[in-house]
Image (cartoon, rainbow, N blue to C red; front, side):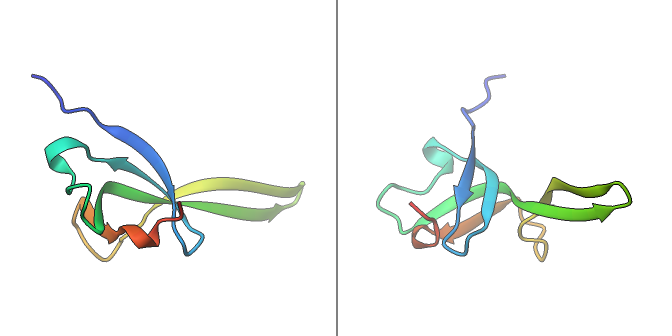
Amino acid sequence: MHQPHQSVKIIKLVSGEDVVTILPTGKNQLPDNSQLLRLEKPLLIKYVPQMTLTGFKDYIALIKWCSYTPDKIITIPKNKIWL
């Protein structure tokens, strides 16, 4: 079965947050002239510093960006994306 083309992107929001997401294309995305953009399964990229007995250590975590909804597709205004 043919799968539609999917594009994984990191999007910088005007809030400073970085979100990794599948950016739907074609008929799964809103028209170019829309003020909104669809994001599929967005995850927040979170930098986590940690102090251990052996010194400073840090790691990156991926956290569900919109944890208050079970929706897999989130629609956000384009003006919330840093271009």
